[in-house]
Amino acid sequence: MSVTTTTNELIVETPRGPSIAGTRITIYSVMDFIKDNWSRDSILQVMTITAEQLDAVYEYVAQHKAEVEQEYERILRREAEARAEAEKIRRERSPFPPDLPWAEKRRLMRQKIAAMKATQTTNGNHDTP
Image (cartoon, rainbow, N blue to C red; front, side, top):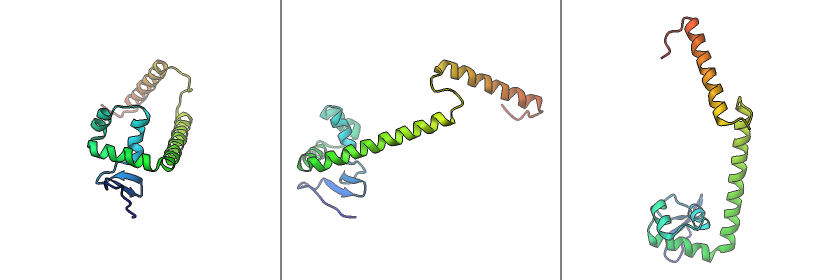
């Protein structure tokens, strides 16, 4: 594993990408909050990092702006593709049409469960709660 550090040695290069030293937090995780315009205090609280560590993230991003932005966009595209694929699989496996309201899905599922319980009782399976 190659370790590259900033001048204050709080950002290290890991297989996951540039990360806050001693943590599993990548700068890209912090960038999600920065891009969403979270306040410094909110980022510090949610990420449970120090002000010095957050400053190191800002410093690293400023020093490697083009490279970081390019990789961040690649990560976002990959995540969007994974979400789309998961949604496609979920829709393919769902017994309900995708536009069916949740209340109707819940009603149909309860009917299905009641029918299964009735079948178990008539088949002599009394082990179910």
